[in-house]
Structures are given as structure tokens and as C-alpha cells.
Length: 362
Image (cartoon, rainbow, N blue to C red):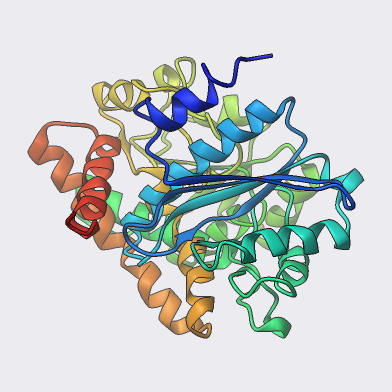
């Protein structure tokens, strides 16, 4: 087992990936709850981020994931223009086996004990129904059902934000935001991806899709007998001739040393989190002349939606905020060109500047 003093504590206090304000280890023996709540920053406001429920191989792995995810949320919330810092929670265990009402209620009590420093929501392994349970013990819970005062499924605005990012990329690269007659490849047509298809087809784009689930592909093809085609897998999709835009909307790490050299698309803009498999991939994309729209910028529609719940959810207000992803993405491309750096680095610089300027003088 990894020495915690050399692993997690080093990350927390001494590495460039650290700088977190607070990490809380939570345990409720009666329900079997083991959880980690990581607050990276409250410089812009209460930390906001989802709750991941996952069977980690070790407690150290769970803490490391919470730290990384919380840091990412600080950047996402900053670039979304939200008055929220970054936080994330992970519950350790297989949700199919150990998730119970008692466990979720216990988790809610731990979140509530932070007094509003952390606001939770859904993530991998947790759903709207789970947040409804957590909210019974914790007022700082978003991602709830409409019946319980929430916004419900956040994938609608997530896809809309990605669509706005694509329009910004088109404007920057081709001088016109229209996606009509552009060829867009989407890897993953689940909750977010299938909404993205609707936006693209409404504008007249040609869409090529793939998904590991045949039923998801069939649903799209049945709905769109024209203008949409399917390929066997992602390997085929990224090599598709004439592709203008590639949209990874499934797993992270979609852009790596194997995929970047064979990409035919001029733009990468998708909903998946953590698309860059390792540092340096963003430079490889730039060297090939491929424009990368940073994932945490264009997929922020969902967090914009859940943040709005705290003020009494209004869809039109949220959509107006998500529309600004177009302008934000354009500003990142302009900053990247001005500084001579990849867009991912430019986005980080802008986010870090906003957090630094918000930090109170000491």
C-alpha cells in the first residue's frame, strides 16, 4: 500500500496539483459509509461539485481522485463565471451493492456539517433520486428532481454548452459560427451526446456517431434516418474522412499518443471530462493544427444548471448563462493566440487569474 505521507499528503500540501483548503474523511459505521470530501478553493464562493460513488481499489486512490476532481471543479466554475469554488466528494464502494437510503442520509449529514462550504450534486454513480435523499439532511444539495425544487437532468444544458463551444471553434477557425454542412463525429450518444445530435441536426450538420451500446446508436438512427450515420467504434470514427469536428462524449483520456496522430478532424470539442490523457497532448494537437476547445469550459452547462438551483431554478436564466460559453471559448482561443500557447493552457491562465483576483488580501 502506498505510504500516505509520500502520496496523498504530498499531493495535498506540496505538489503543483495541491493547494486544497480542506479534506474531510467521513465514516458512518452503521450504514457502511466511507467518503472523502475535498474542497480545493472557496476564493470565488462555496465549493461546488458532484458526489462520485465508485468502488476504488484503495482509500488512497479515492482521496487522490477527490483531490484531482475538486481542483478541476475550481477551474470549471471559474471559467463558467460562477460565484463558486471547486469541491468534490467520493463515496467508496460499489453503488450497486452498498448504496442505501441510510448511507445517503449519513452522507448528507456530513455535507451539512460543513455549513455551506461545500455544495454537492450528482456525478458518476449518483443520480437525481439520490440527491433528493441527501437533501433531506442537507440544504446544500443540488441536482434534485423538479418535484423537490431541483432542476432535474443537467445533460440538456451540458449539450447546449458543447454546441456553443463548437460554434465558437467554427467562428475562430473558419470565420463563421454556422455548423451547417459541417461533418461532426460524436463518440458516445448517451445522456449528453443524444441531445448534441439534436442541436447539430437542427442546424443542418452531418453527424457520424458511435457508442458501445447498440441500443443508443439505434435510437439515434431511428430518430434521424437522414443526416446521421454510424461507425463501428471510436477508432473508426477518428479516422473518418472529411471530419470537421470530433466530439468525445464518453470516457476521459480520449486524446492520447495513439489517437492524436490519426485524427482527421480540425476541431476537438466534446462533453467528456479530462479528455487529455497526459500533459503535453495539448501541444501535440496544436502542432498538428487541431483546435482544441478545453473540455471543462465547453461542458460547464451542467454545473451552471445545478448552481442555479440555489437561487430558485429558472431554465431560461440558465440557458442564457450557458450561451456565454460561446464568448468564453472565443476569448480562450484569442488568449492562446496572443500568448503563443495551446488553448488548454490559456484556459488555465484565465481561471487562475480570476481565482487570484478574488482572493481577499491578507
